[in-house]
Structure formats: structure tokens, C-alpha cells
Amino acid sequence: MWPEVLREALRDGRRGLLGWMVGVTLYVLLILAFYPSIKNDPAVTEVMQKLPAALRSLFGEDFSTPAGYVGGRLFSLMPVLLTLFAALSGSALIAGAEARGLLEWPLAQPLPRGALLAGRALALLVMLLGLGFVLFLSTWALGQVFQAPLPAARVLQTAALHTLGAWVFGALALAVGAATGRPGLASAVGAGLGIGLVVLHTLSGQVPALQDVAWLNPWHAALAEAPLRHAVGGAPLLVCLLLGGVWVLLAAPFFQNRDVGR
Image (tube, rainbow, N blue to C red; front, side, top):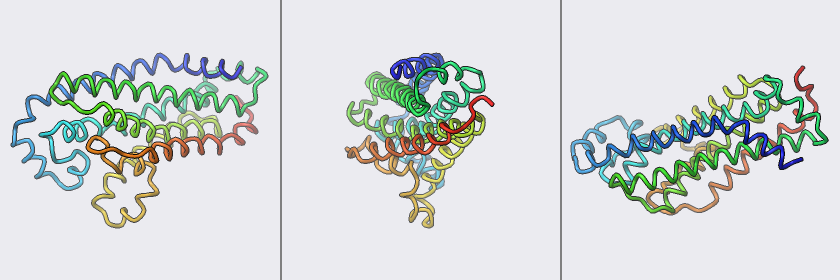
């Protein structure tokens, strides 16, 4: 029964996932298609250097190299997009299914609620990894096409860090939805906190008071290094993966004892 839980959750989220995969690919295409026209233009770098420090920390200053351009124009906004997908998908897997009356049949099966929650959390992680793989593949392949070649290993690690950073907040949305049965609240908490902490992570490089507590921000683990420029160890990936799992574990007793659908 447990593999069936995973298959069912993936089947329910397949249509939305395919739409996001297409959207991410088109976004990557749009961003990288402009690179050949600006990579040798010194005026672009000059304009970027005149921007406020907060914006330079978000978008970068060097658009003349593939790593600088891809990191500044493409991956700077990926945490927001991936967090939105993760939070919306996470809230839909338990609370959203409950609101649509689709959770009654799975709960009627001889399967513990904890296993159902774990199966749907795994489904969320699989969907996020699928979207992250599309991000990696499209960035690496289109980079070869549009004169922005980057090592596949660096692109893969960057996409993985962004994806698992979003997993933290998708798992939070799943956990809040499982604990409360309220999909709107779940998606708002996951997306709002995830995007808000992206902003704080960006500002932490400019605000001394935020630098001292930056390590508390889950995005610090995912985004503090620059994997497009140099190799990063596996510790940040493990931290993000485990933190998302902690949210699910904390929600399990609430989901176990709650009157679902009432």
C-alpha cells in the first residue's frame, strides 16, 4: 500500500508539475537568449555597478561571464519561484486533498496516517527534484547554445541547492496543512516565510545586525556559497533535506489525532 500512496500523490500533482517544468524551461530560455547580446558590452557592467548595494547583492555585478550572468539573472529569482511551487504543492497534498474530499479513500485503507503523511512528503520531494532536474538540464543545455557554457557539475549542484532550499518550505506547507487541514494557511505560511527569508538572506550581506544571525536562515545553507564559481560540499544539501523532514515529523502527531474532514 505504501508505494501506492506515492504513486497516487504523484499522479495527482503531475499536471501542475508539467506546467511548472514548461514554465521553468521557457524562463531559462528567455534569460539565456539575451546573453550573447550583452556579454561583451561594458556598459551593462557599468550600470550594474551603479545600482544600490542591496540590488547588487541580489543580481550580482558581473554580467560579462557565464557564471556571473546565470547566477545574477537566472538563479537570483529561482528561490522565489521554487518556493512558490513547493508551498502550493505541499499545501495541496494533504490539506488541499482534504478540502476537495479526496482524502477519505486513502484514510479508509489499512495504512497508518503517519505512512500516508510520509508518502505524500516523499511525493513532494520527488516532484521538486524533478523540477530541479529540468532547471539543471535546461540551464546547462541552453547555456551551450547561447554562449554561456558552464560545467555540468556546477550547474547541477546549484540547481540542487535551490531545490532543496525550497523543499524546506514546501515541507513546512505540507506540515501545516496536515496539522490544521487549512490549505490557504499552509500555502501562505510556506510561501510567505520562504520568500521573506530569501529577502532577509539578500539583505544580510548589507545589514550587520542580520549577519550575526544569518546562520539561522535555512536559505543561508542553500545560498551562502557560490557553486557556479567553485565546488561546494554536500553539507548544505543534507541540512536542507533534514530540516524539511523535521517539519513533517513534527506534524505527524497532529495529523494522527485530528478529525480529518470535519
